[in-house]
Amino acid sequence: MALYTIGDLHLSLGSDKTMEVFGEAWRDYVDRIAAGFSKLNSDDVTVLCGDLSWGMSLEESLADLRFINGLPGRKILMKGNHDYWWNTAAKMKRFFAENGLDTLDILHNNCHWYGDRALCGTRGWFYELDQGGHNEKVLLRELGRLETSLKAAGTAEKICFLHYPPLFQGYQCPEILRLLREYGVRECYYGHLHGATQRRAIEGEQYGTAFSLVAADYLQFVPKKICD
Ligand SMILES: [Fe+2]
Ligand SMILES: [Fe+2]
Image 1: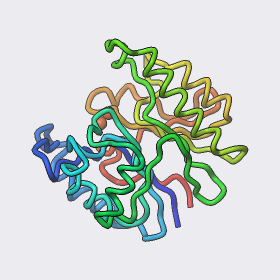
Image 2 (image 1 turned 180 degrees about the horizontal axis):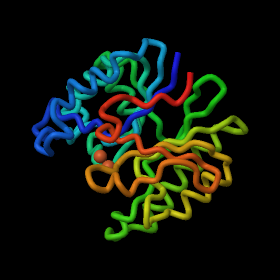
Image 3 (image 1 turned 180 degrees about the vertical axis):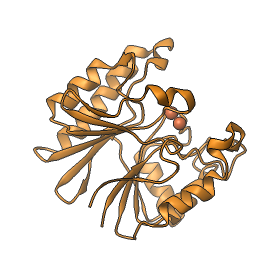
Image 4 (image 1 turned 120 degrees about the vertical axis):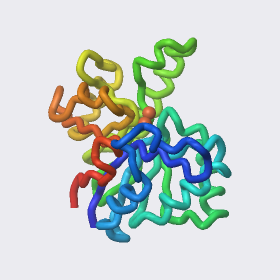
């Protein structure tokens, strides 16, 4: 039994937005994801850090969700900025049940458990959103979701998963970093960065938390093992 994470699968099996158009880095990516997961076992757990399906609705994402469901082990899904199919937890759970997607869970305003460790997280906040009109509102909502998730973990050791990086070279989100520090989060995994921006990713310890980028193309489509 082991805990893994990977983000940004960007599947498009039921829509027409294949990532193959982005060149060599994404060539055969669906097969490479399947190969990357093939070494996992049925009792493993993988947190998927958002940007999972290009579908615009649950129905349009069904082929992608079926593909994810068929990968070995339990998968805990998080929302990225491109997950337009995302819905209320109740609707998603019902949709999963109706379609036999029985290896999927949702990390959203809650926490999950891996042994006595808590798996916490939310989409997070990124500077790209500063251009929108509701920045403060969205930031506060994300901070609230993160704190709800961290609080749900009580005094347990917390591993945090975000879609947006809370920091990279030349950028920090102080509000998110403060929450990670306040709640004693020692490890934080994030996705979202692709292509040239991956060179600005921060890996390693900052302010007492170890950060790792786990976007699928950065990991060569092989889930990153966190612990046994
Ligand atoms: Fe992405
Ligand atoms: Fe993203």
